[in-house]
Image (cartoon, rainbow, N blue to C red):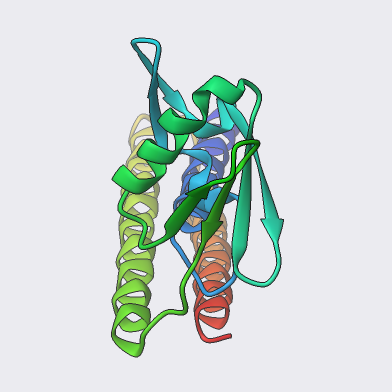
Length: 183
């Protein structure tokens, strides 16, 4: 029983972490290194994330600086950033790439906000699936007489409280991202 609940907590934690990573890759009004870290770069015949080839730093107020570990990779990095279609402009300055984030229009903010809400709903759906699987496992244990009725209800209540906590965390992340968009 404890193993089932611990596995559920691990899966939900992974799901929440995935959601946070998804949000970090969505552009807001403030520059954030997570916007570029997972951009796929084609270099010497292999594809790898930008974060494995360069360091990304924030340069206020609306720029990111990409410093490649290999200066010969700058053209490939610039090409990959442009191909990622993030709505940014790039300038190869010889030693690094300056990525400028233009101000977001009202329409673009609304699109991004809708995207964030859609990602949040996908995460909630995933959480519900995980919850349903655990609830079935608890019911099977009850049906097999491995646990009593009181324990079954207590565990189901515990699972539901965990889901509510994780949903609150998702809501907090969405609120935080929308605040970033409106700054």
